[in-house]
Length: 437
Image (cartoon, rainbow, N blue to C red; front, side, top):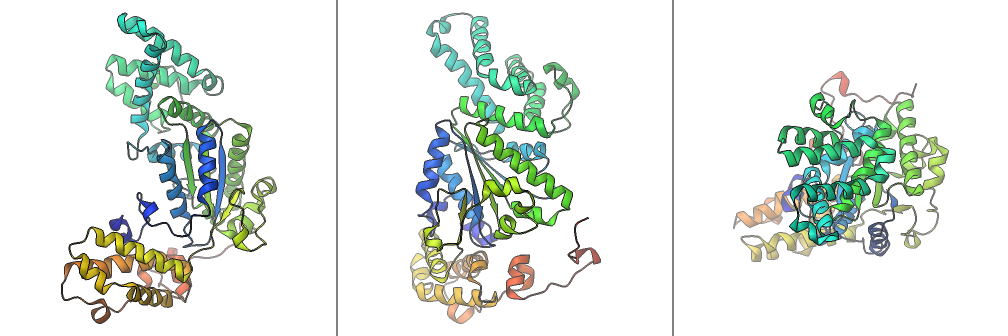
């Protein structure tokens, strides 16, 4: 956690130790996780400006989901690497980022192997006499159970079921090369050896509509492997506002299609979360371009934020204020001190008064905008202050450190808040706001 903060990124674990101001959302989100674990499905759109904690919230929910034995996946939407209108690419990223409480990304292959083990265990549990019979009898019983559990998937995506059968056969035969190739194909990877696909009776590559069926198949496999659901986060969806108009419209329609499928009950065990700015949900370059999608996401935020409904389809994050920033700084200091070499020195030199002074200094360099300060503030606190206090006995941050913020260490949003401009190194680095064709 400390290493991630030192780099200026959101930690992947232990976020409950840093959570500030999320208590109001927890009961509603936990209730939705429980409903999904019971065979339902859910969708939540997180709304907030840069620095409001959208990524933190989704990873915090992911931790709570992992505690319920869910699998989780976080996919960063981008025009070049993961375009939303190409769901086959999104599905591939799900496989690559899949995580369980036991396995870090990618947990896709361990989930497949757990699924195979569970199939055999369930077959023997259903008929204890199988344990005394031949391996051929056990395999036949497992095959019958497999067909039963994949019946629904076979109707919509027979290729997924075929590949699972072939994967199991390759594992049993000890054919590691074929098993590896089929596991990759099931995970949506392109350029799988044709010989492996022929062994399963499948051909071609995964397309947009096939990916929707593969997601359904993955949920079935997860459930049989002991994971009652999948929390899928599509992060930074607001980047759709910067793509070509026709690509944006395709992406918005893909999102609408996903929501419709969730509402129809096609994806039991799926909890989909997306993140975006207010401009994405309300602006002319975002959701409003597709009225059916805008209607599904419509939420009234005209009243006092204190009375926002956490059960609504959209959650509004109000962003950090000074009190929240100071509370977060105190939590990070105490967490750091718990594993530090000089905890007493940290407590004495990095007291609440110094944290307040550092927060005000960082916020001041960012145009007084507390909302965009958390990342930079925590990075300065850990890397420039706490690390030095812990390592150097004569370092006093009040005497030896004057917080400075340069344009090069800021993101585009942070630079805009601070009024800083980074000179373009090449003509291609100059951003032009051109109308969509």
